[in-house]
Image (cartoon, rainbow, N blue to C red; front, side, top):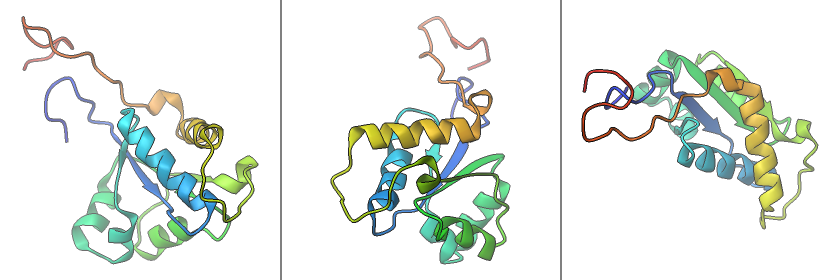
Amino acid sequence: MADNCCQSENEIMILSCSGGSNVGQLSNQAAVELTQEGFGKMFCLAGIGGRISGFVQSAKDTPAMVAIDGCKVGCAKATLESAGVPLQHYLVITDTGVEKNKNYNLERSDIDHVKAAVRQVVGENMRPEVAPPASAGGCSCGGTC
């Protein structure tokens, strides 16, 4: 999975609901931003639901995963269970105090709240380290580049 010695092999797969409510969209936006921040990598939950073999196998093989559902309906969880993918870390946004509604104008404070909740569920000790860039003299992480 790592392209160079400075990347973590313990990348977190992020699977998010993207349902038709504010909490579904909060799930998706948090997954996007966590990926951009290097916390993990967002993967395609729809591919797992569609039983695309490579997607399902990747989800089964990943060492660390978090599924984010917007509400108690639990579409992400049901998708994983139906595909035979073991649930590892799991968050339901409405369980964190965010009310479900049809307001798609997401608030920055809600996005940050969801991202913090995901980090807490996964546990900061599992977070892949974001390595500094390699120096001109070799690999900055001490590995062999």
